[in-house]
Figure (cartoon, rainbow, N blue to C red):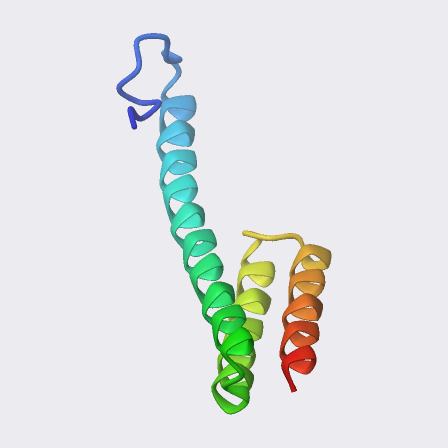
Length: 96
């Protein structure tokens, strides 16, 4: 993906150029965190469907911590994190 800084239509103002660089870095970091969250939730769902309750519980705990951390950093909204944690717990409890 082409970054905003390398694009043709960019602000001439120094502070805006810096802001664009910061936004690009944050975007990449947030994208990586969201991807890791998807992977961890997928692992929980896979373990739950296979009936591996202990592993699913451990993975759900780790995923919940990751969701909380993402919410505190501003990657996710806190209600979104709470909803995802609730759905994970529901999936683990359903497999029990």
